[in-house]
Image (tube, rainbow, N blue to C red; front, side):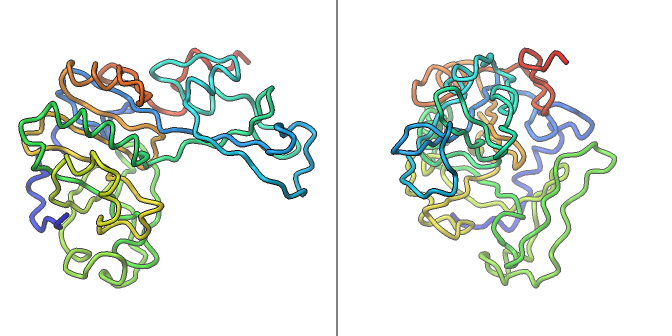
Length: 293
């Protein structure tokens, strides 16, 4: 995973993004035949002893059972609708008044999916399919948002949520010297790929590398292989598809051919649904689960 000093290889992206859009195309390029939304796994837990958080004394220490859970499973637990534009906060029930937790009728407590990060095992399944739909699985680019994990300096960067185009700007530096973080000074002080509201370091990497979770052990932007950060974007040299994990999204968007998208959606190990071009993924876009009052 070698840093790319000349970010010109990413200059094809900005013309395909729409700064003024209030839909996914502020971060996801136009121009692909089809798009899929890969839902980041959520978590749920419950006390091992009682099997439910209902009536459980929180200060009491006990073993906790924890598991990953799909959005479909969450929606079923709360009697809500799972659909391509679902928002996690809409498919869960309300938080409890006492502990500000989301607990289903069976006593499971739910944690939100991790935004901006696709689980390495899910990414591996996705990448395996992606590499069957490109002529260049051994050549590509991984882009990483400059603010993750103190890449340029120990303090990192301020997190800037996506906003309207008129107010969008790169997140400001912490002021620490570039090169005092995970990346060497030459990289930390070098050029970034500037996209609307986001700047990225670019790395030369074969997409097929992401088909194995082992990439996390050597990724220069990852401090701990046990808690790896997935790339913000991945694309092959022929640009047959693009994978986008926007830092504020709890899902990953893939643009590519219809055959590619159909294969991803059909894979039983990936929770994904096809979404239309121009899909609205903002917090209030989940109309089927929108409160009536």
